[in-house]
Length: 178
Image (cartoon, rainbow, N blue to C red; front, top):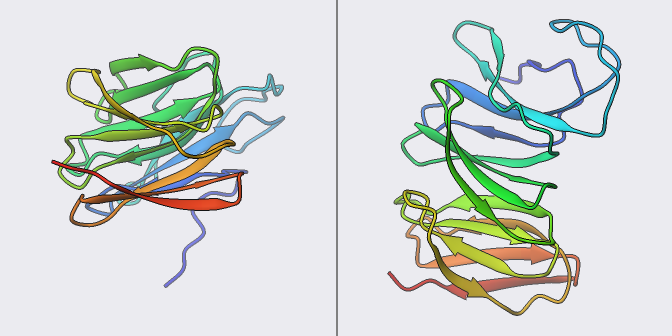
């Protein structure tokens, strides 16, 4: 059954593993029902909608354009890419930033957790896909092959492969060794 829960522009969204929460990118606009009037300043934040309570709450509050929210497999954290050249991992319960990884000189367009939560993939405007350890922020591997902006990333259910799509008109399937 379809249910309209966001009467605002939200170009990207993710559902928590238990289905209770919906994270969405809120692009600041002139007016929304549950916030005071706001003038768009070219930034966006991630908000959380709780399906059980019907409440919306702001998760992120920094001067970047947030993109591509992705819940960790346990639902306790959420990753986001940003136009401020960062990948951030947030604690869902209180919005505390847990990790900050940088991609100097390039926007981060997409992020995805591996099914076991041990890897965080981030695709960026330089055509690279970076694999991070989300628990400590260590860059583990960089995947080269795309020649344009990487816009999407998704792990196979077994975590052995990562699919990425880019503006170079290719989809790549990467073998990810444990």
